[in-house]
Structure formats: C-alpha cells, structure tokens
Amino acid sequence: MRVLLLGGTAEGRALAKALSPHVDVISSLAGRVPDPALPAGSVRIGGFGGVDGLKSWLHDEHIGAVVDATHPFAATMTAHAAQACGELEIPHLVLARPAWDPDGAHVVKSDIEAAQVVENHRYRRVFLTTGRSGTKAFAGSDAWFLIRAVTEPDARTLPRHHELLLSRGPYRYDDEIAIMRDHRIDALVTKNSGGDMTRAKLDAAAALDIPVVMVQRPPLPAGVTKVDTVEQAADWVARQT
Ligand code: NAP
Image 1 (cartoon, rainbow, N blue to C red):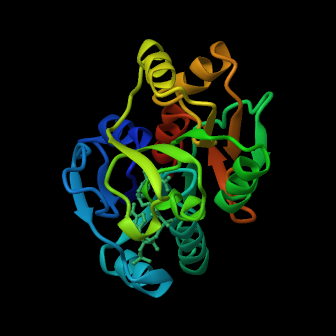
Image 2: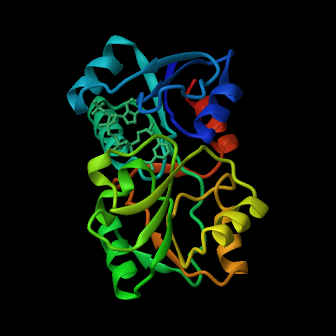
C-alpha cells in the first residue's frame, strides 16, 4: 500500500524517516521554500490543483492512506485532503503537534485581529513571527516591526517601518532573549504553532515581561481523526497496511 504524507514540517520529516523504507511512502511539499529540508524516501513537490487535482493524483498513484502532517495553519491543504479522502473513501489521518498553552496571551482569531491589538495597545516595537504570509495585516501600521520569516515576504505586504530577519528554527532561549532585548521589543506576535522548535520566544517574552499576541489555530475539518505524535501516526499507518 502506498501512503501519501503531506509534509512541510519537522513532524512530517520525522514520520517519513520512521516509515522508510519498509512502508511505500511519498512525501509531498508545497514548494514554497527554495531549499527545503527533504524527507527520507520519495518526495514530490508542488500543489495538486485543488480538491479535484488531488483526487486524480491519489487515484493515479494508487494511494491507500493519507497522513496530513502539514503545519497547523496550512488550513487549505488540510481541508482539501479531508474532502478528497472522504470522497474517495481513503483512510486519512491528521498529525498535528499539540498547541501551546496561551496562558496570559492576548488570544486572537486572525492576523487582522492581532494587528488591531497592536494598534489598541499602542505597541511600538513588535517582534512579528507570523511568517511570510502573516505581514499583510500589519502593512498599514505605524509601529516598527522586527519580522522573522523563513523566506522574504512580498514587499507590498510589509509595514513602513521594519527590519527583516530571514531565518529558520529551531531557536534557543538565550538567543531569543538577546533578540528581544537588542531590539527593545515591546510585544511579540505569534501564531499558536505549537512544538518545541519555536517555543523559546514564549519563554523569553515571559522572562522579559513582554506581552504576547497569539493567533489561534484554524479549526480542523469536522470528523477528521487526529493524533499528536509521530509515534501515534506511525502506529496508525501500520494498522492500515
Ligand atoms: P495552505 O494555505 O493550506 O495551502 C495552499 C495550497 O498550497 C494548497 O491548496 C495546495 O495547492 C498547496 N499545498 C500546501 N501544502 C502542500 C503540500 N504539503 N503538498 C502539496 N501542495 C501543498 O498551505 P500554506 O499554509 O501555504 O503552507 C504551505 C506548506 O508550508 C505546507 O506544506 C505546510 O506544512 C508548510 N508550512 C506552513 C506554515 C504556515 O504557517 N502556514 C508554517 C511552516 C510550514 P493545491 O490546491 O494546488 O493542491
């Protein structure tokens, strides 16, 4: 049986490593970053062409099970996979790392709401870590932003006053403390991505008494089966074969 593993995350790579070579697994990446960390085993890169394109691909490639290990904020891909697998009756699992405890944070539903919180609280020096697609909502702000992303955001989506920090996690607590101190950050804006690779910024913000604005995860499609860990996902795959 062939398994499609929708990836683009550390969990996706860890699951590909756990399954290869004894399971016939093909990982799929969106192709957003020029030099992606490649998972073990077979890899395909690029979109499928919506739900219909995905359904054709699953059929043509004789896929018997799908694990969606995309990022918790990759809501479109997750919705497409749930729909396509539902319609084709292909077993389907979502692997999503547990969310962070938002304790003490301003919890918001969207980047737009996060930008409103920045405005309302008159934060002036913001550490913005919502990724390359997360800057647009802040484009009209007068505050200064330290924008950290893996790849450069579209220039049209950038706020007037900013500095770009292109980098990829994991990040260490001491470095996060130094970044926030050196740039005199007065608020941190983050998505609730979860996981250990990028959580040091929350601990650093707490230590420096810097307020956190946290964008909630989009809800999962109704009725999907979800696990938290790579081990649980590997067990699920073993039960399908
Ligand atoms: P998205 O908005 O949910 O998806 C937009 C479109 O990109 C999908 O409709 C699909 O195109 C294509 N796509 C997304 N993930 C894909 C995959 N793994 N394989 C093939 N096509 C994929 O996705 P996104 O938020 O832009 O994320 C893109 C990728 O980056 C994902 O693989 C995700 O795991 C990774 N990532 C995302 C974030 C984040 O914050 N969103 C953070 C870290 C990593 P078609 O409709 O043409 O099939």
